[in-house]
Image (cartoon, rainbow, N blue to C red; front, side, top):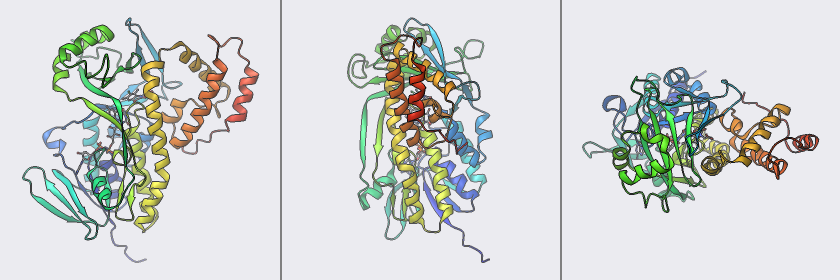
Length: 456
Ligand code: FAD
Ligand code: E0Q
């Protein structure tokens, strides 16, 4: 057996996907170089960007396990058993996500997670250079040019292949696009978001139920809050760009406070810095990014948000990006031919990314308008009964997405069949009594084959 030359890969971006992929590849024996435009968050504090915390589910946890990162991450995680729905009159209702505490999701701090993954990547042997922004790529000479964000200096770096883990505004995608049309299309949502903070109670504890994702559904808009392990909550208000209310009519912290007093009254005493936060924090845009091609032969490939940014309403963007990392690492290990590996990665992941992008868009309407609707609640009741009657066939939509690792496209297809079944068998009813169970069961057996959890 000869000594194989060490294989080499250059990653752009040391965010969530970049840091995880660096760990996986370095552990597989690759020489891994990573370039990140921001400073090292361990030195200068986390620069933030976007939401402060994220929901981590089984897909993401499985990927973290592949890198032996799950334990370190879970030490800082807060369990969320379900949605705590805040009605307009302040009444609360917990809707469990799963059957029991074995089916829960986790709130994690984005900055802490990134730091944990950066430490692991470096310990595995990856070399991470901070303050290096990819500026351009010469694909013929195989040279990438980086700008030093502090002194403006330009650094040419030779590469074998580039991986773009540089997020929704990916510079590598831009460079690839200049070389070859990737078939890129961005669909902006006509809603945006603003983040606010709920501090701990006077005694230092959580001021609301910590083990839940709080949600204030209000028809065309909504608020959510996720717990942080430092006893705070991060609140995110999603609002149309135009309308009443809309970001064009709520122009100041004072106007935001008036909106909250009217529509989210129980939250107002919990957000003491509402007006200041409103004025200081940027308004975030939301979009879905579709690409026809994710790779340039064997020279460059995109993953995570760089390849398929999605709206956040299913809490799956990071989870999907982590699944991408495991898939790409697997395909890179399976062949010496980079072009083949990238093509196989794209073929596996593109249909699934599209499926979760579509499900995330659908979940916005569901979250803001349906979770407190009586027809929806009856469908959920039938869903629970059918889950008990046919546990190997009728698996709730949320379970397939968040607690299983079946391909997103399979989850989407089965969800559509199930939704149709739920709607048809609850139509015209306000309770389940009198339902024709024989007909419902026959429908299930005919339309839903046994679901193999091969990924268990
Ligand atoms: P990023 O995390 O954006 O990392 C990209 C990295 O590349 C950054 O470090 C950036 O500095 C660096 N970079 C950028 N350009 C360059 C360059 N030119 N050169 C070098 N480096 C560069 N997902 C979930 O799973 N659960 C949730 O609950 C959830 N909630 C969300 C809530 C909101 C409001 C939003 C907006 C998103 C949410 N997401 C959630 C999605 C999640 O944030 C993203 O899917 C995830 O961050 C994607 O990871 P990434 O590594 O692809 O990109
Ligand atoms: C989750 C967990 C930003 C965000 C993140 C999320 C979720 C939601 C609504 C939002 C979806 C759900 N959800 O509760 O069905 O499960 O991550 Cl808005």
